[in-house]
Length: 518
Ligand code: ADP
Ligand code: ZN
Image (cartoon, rainbow, N blue to C red; front, side, top):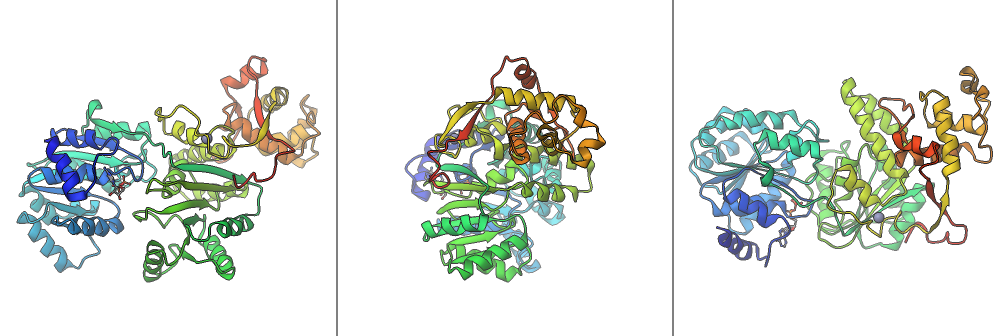
């Protein structure tokens, strides 16, 4: 069976060999075992269901929440001479009826559908009456409530599906799954431990950078000037930012387009096409852009503001370098970004959801303040043990600076947090350490604490940043909820007791130049 799979790889697709994980995933499916494949973006997940779909008898059903991607996938399959189609709401009723009829008659090897299709009795009855090769759940993290993009309609089709008499082997594929999501998917679609193929999340061709304290517009203009002919995406947090930045860059003569949900469908389609066909090199967009856009030569992804969580960040940044060539992922951080994301989270009606989102936001903030390797930080977040070495090319790995022992300063901050009752955030703690006569300090009588004003030579801003660093490194935990209340962790106690040193990389005064571009 695997020989046949290899033959298909070479004959239909013209690829000499499998990529990591592909062979294993394909062989599980061919053995008839439900399989979960976790592979990074660009890792080649499509082939993992397409090859078994071709090798096995019957029709393969591919369920995907991304309507925009279906047409591309189907076009690609048809160009190889494979009978494939999609049925979704973008078609007229008559077209849907026709394709369903053809499906019933076994005319297709592949049928792509959106989860909503399973609400249709006609579709379910057609499904139950044909020979099926496999059913694949693309973007499978959407079926888990722990996923960052949970779609209840996606999850609810699984029990419906399991009732069909001719249920074939099931396959789930995703690029972003935490251990929780993996567990959830395994349980939901009955995947055994041995049938999980996880190649890890690491994208070795990407380099991550965080830029703080720079004028963002100026940074972007300089950046684009240096690489005028490379394709890239700039993500903004709001439509307004996208509009403004687009205006500024157009005025400066850059070939930039924009994409957000405030534009008409026609405008968005046009912008997307211009970008994919390299008519424009830079796309300025909100997170509405990207789901299902298959452009492999994206060289950079700049985040104009910090996104809401690491899942979204990694997915968006991961659109760089899908061809395996280097990709530059830059995040421009300013502390106002945090307020905006808090505001957005507050729009959610569910308290539980808010709490969860605040937790994820905190991890994102930590990412912006850690001094550890950024690639490793992300992989740790996803509990991915596959990479143990620092990447050597992120802005922290390449930072030119000096290690400075900050144990004493850390002890001061941590004791102050303790004395303030572990009920307040970084801002007020910084004020107390600085010795500010702010109203709120007086209100709580913090001027009487022994830690009041013990760090006068730092500015409040520096102190806030240092507290954020201590949080990112796991000495302080911000608690859950809207207003972070800093609490000491176990590691913090070790620091206070003098059993654990705190070392920080500080800007060395002599080697400052080139810092942002190396
Ligand atoms: P994913 O869905 O995991 O993001 P795709 O399935 O879109 O990735 O594959 C990304 C690119 O890699 C596609 O252009 C695909 O044709 C190519 N590809 C997949 N498998 C192989 C392989 N074994 N050898 C070479 N290229 C491959
Ligand atoms: Zn690194």
